[in-house]
Length: 177
Image 1 (cartoon, rainbow, N blue to C red):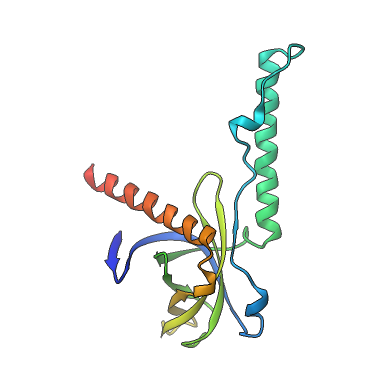
Image 2 (image 1 turned 90 degrees about the vertical axis):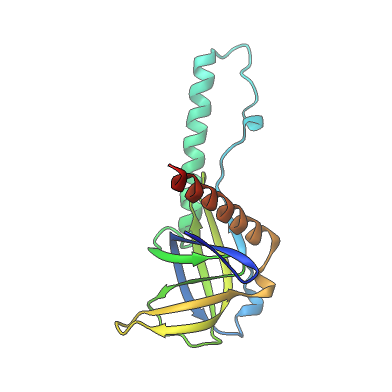
């Protein structure tokens, strides 16, 4: 589902998300980042030289792509993106709403790691300020987070907006069927 709310649209979905509180002292040293895969583009494959058969060249390209996927997985793992769990979220380019297991209060700053489903997957590291907290009563909390202004690095924002637009198209196409 998507909703028009305030100055940007929102999409409800299930994403791999991990959030944890950070101190404001740590914040100046933390930067939002995008972690993309190592997929090779067609221009990187070049062409086979005369000594290689076309079938061998195709196999080498396939092996190279598989190695890139392994490298991407290792890279996401090294940044602690692989072991995060799926959560229901409501995401916009300016913030998100989701459940968290850590007790937080309005005004707290949290680090958010999420994986946007794409090929290859895109890891996002961003920071936000908690603007609303509702206890669920089972040591989990529904929170609303507004991404920090310093956090709206153009690459991070671009990846979120690309995901939101793609997901909105998918939802609209499914409704037409």
